[in-house]
Image 1 (spheres, protein in one colour):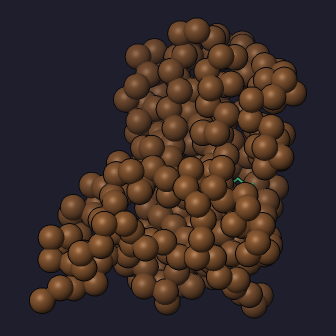
Image 2 (cartoon, helix red, strand yellow):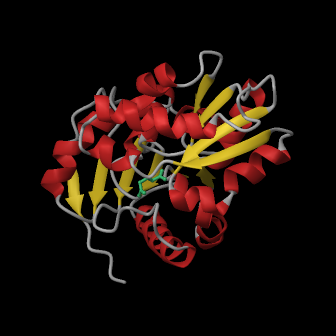
Length: 274
Ligand code: DGL
């Protein structure tokens, strides 16, 4: 008898979490996915803890009601500000992006000195700083608020983005952090500008992407918890992915593919009441 495939819920403030879904699909292609993008209320990166926690808990419940047997909080801001509240409110295992990203960055850095870039809210929470210090690494946090709008504008390989990156990274890799050897991408949008960041960062710097590190952590969890055995579950080659968006379905279909690297088809509109 075949069982239904396991279903992983992925939550983000909007489109950016599709970079995490992309990493998950590469690593765990035998699961189905439900993705919630809170596009009507983004950006989260400039919002308060209470607001982000309220929105994120609502979305987590919605994903649970739509078959999610595990939740991946792809949004760095939501993880940094509200992972505890989401975990307490959820009835399934929850994985955020901060711990996996910090694990990988601390493990990669020989100098134990890491520069983390993220939104204003992520940086103000010091979640990455605390996680890195707990792993024996010094951290410099740098908010890069212009990157999210530049990426959403599609200005990926663009002189303006490169110039902005040059200014941010010059400030970050200074004053005692000139010899930091890891740049940790603490925001869903930054993997798209990784080539620009690699060009602009000092030559000795390795880039660690919290999206990839999180996919690895989810892969380990999937092996540990009793989700349906892939060999016994429905025989379909491709995962079924359902997208829920709180703003325009058409816009989600249009912008999604540049983050996911795949067509974004089954998008449903959701209206979460306050
Ligand atoms: N998803 C957010 C993050 O990773 C970036 C976009 C936003 O500010 O909502 O921090």
